[in-house]
Length: 94
Image: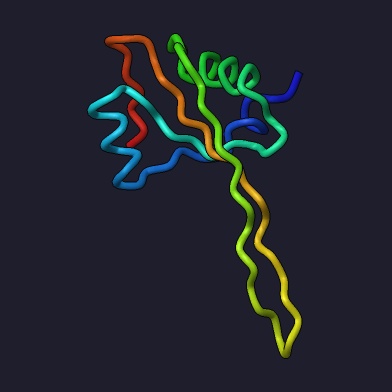
């Protein structure tokens, strides 16, 4: 089993993520691209001691970036997880 801190990298504190947490009790995390929904659910439950109802994931391709002259590089690919908690439970991220 992977370590909890290897699966969950950071919490997303954007305007959209804060609206989701306030209105729909959903929290957004940036997770390891190799993690699946079951691993993400277990990691959040262990890290925050909360009950997870559902996990939605989205893969994002890294953007192309220009490096010196005509060579092109790429930022790393990443994965976002939107975690829905049980009614009445909250996570303090700030």
